[in-house]
Length: 86
Image (cartoon, rainbow, N blue to C red; front, side):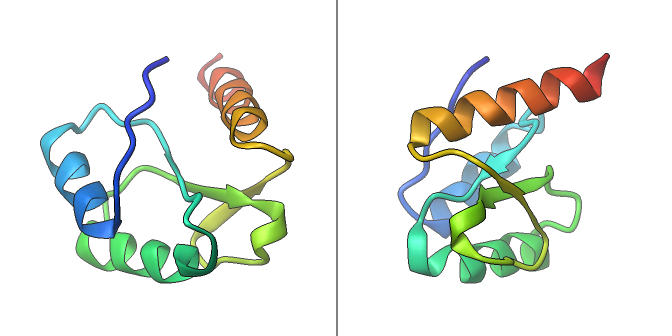
């Protein structure tokens, strides 16, 4: 698994446009996660699935993930993607 990070939503959109092999987007930008999800889905309707920490609340368009740290979230996401591919 390769993890690509983005500074902000514009950087994320640029990276998504350049690399169509992205399997998922994990939103870790706290209070602006909902706005980031909305922007990604508006600008790129074919974007990969979006995920966010459960503690972020219900972010429209993003599936919730459990985990207390960024590492836990990445591990949970990797396991979910692995299970979906089998």
